[in-house]
Length: 165
Ligand code: COA
Image (cartoon, rainbow, N blue to C red; front, top):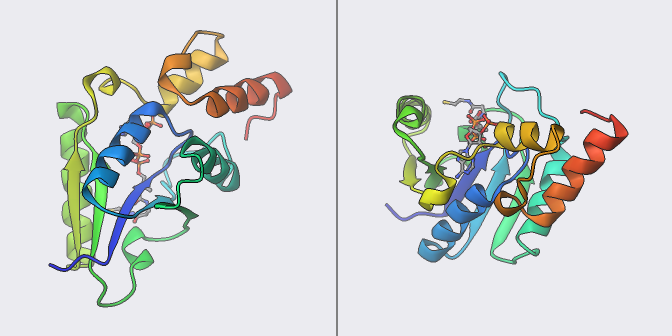
């Protein structure tokens, strides 16, 4: 399969060092990665799509090998007809597996030109999630070493201003 595009999709509400760890692993394998901020209809994000995009761009220092886009709709429709693509997903713990397998198989059924590649984060990020990060900052806990500085500041600003999405 000659891959045209490598896509790392997610909600990224907000991006964490765990996501960055996966992204860096993907960049070690592929020249360019598109981070696609998609819509999970079961989530009500704290940050707007544009805020999440800006946070990711700043967190990767505007790396020219990382393109960050927002996308509304089915992820497989982000790929042009006939184009071959890889979706990168992080696998943290066994409980991720069932949901990820379901999504990977469904995406492949919807578009056989899409393959999902799973990468495992560094073990220090195995139990990290965006909602955990949001909760800890909300209740004034220290999560600094698990998120980029810009994200920590953005979360503090959100909770201080009461502008909760
Ligand atoms: N580090 C830290 N956290 C991680 C992580 C890592 N390496 N890998 C996963 N996570 C966490 C996320 O922080 C998130 O945590 P939260 O739920 O507490 O916020 C959770 O794992 C899973 O989120 P995410 O990876 O963002 O995926 P998602 O389940 O929200 O799915 C899309 C997002 C965009 C990929 C999916 O909804 C989608 O494809 N939407 C488009 C519609 C579509 O095509 N649907 C058909 C799918 S078959």
